[in-house]
Image (tube, rainbow, N blue to C red):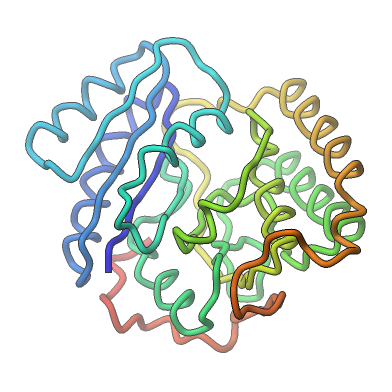
Amino acid sequence: MNVAVVIAAYDEQENIGPLTLRLIQTLDSIPVAWSLTYVIEGTDGTVEVAKRFAADRPEILVLYNRAPTGLGRAFRLGFEAIPQDADLVITMDADLNHQPEEIPFLIDSIRAYDADIVVGSRRLTQSQTEGAPLWKTVTSVIIGFVMRTIFKVAVKDMTSGYRVYRAACLRKIHFQNDDFAFLPEILIEAAAMQAIMVEHPIHFIFRKSGVSKMNVWTTARSYVRLFGLCIVRRARLSRPPLETLPSRRKEVRDPSTAVDRKSSLGKSQGS
């Protein structure tokens, strides 16, 4: 199995080193061939740290833009760099919100449920969240509720960036949003394709170093734009999809009590 990890980082000098070390340790411990693509923006020295790792590990590719272009656009660039032989694509935050040691559990989940997308979820019974600001939690919950209600996407955590995609599914999804709202947009598009999506509980720890890059007004505008785009597309969700994934049903399950947290691929090294 070939696994491609894609991470966008904007001025994350304090976090990129510990994150990369933990990723290498985790990915080396499971029976997969892996690659890691960083899409780095900003001028705080993050790119220099990443390039030092890339010099020692040929699995690591570093793409760099000096000026920030938006989270969605950065991930679009990263997705374009995914190796053609990739079977799974993993995305996560660069600020250590997401624990690399949980990657084996998410891979187990996508295999156990034969899913197209696994969302690392903060909204399941077994999920743990530490230190998240109240306004971010409330915003995420409201967005998720509205999206589920309007677009019938039965995923509780629509804004989580910790995900595993089947590469074949991801290549069929074309999102337009250049900012944070690309995350729910991907799930809306996947639902239109009748993709099988499941959620798996994660341990989310709000950043302890650096500052959040989420601008309230930019993010709000991105969601307004997303609602506009999705309302235009809504008719498509009520018709047979133009392009669906072969031999798959639209099905969303909550595996929070069904998937054993003891991964067959490797043991967690702690969150």
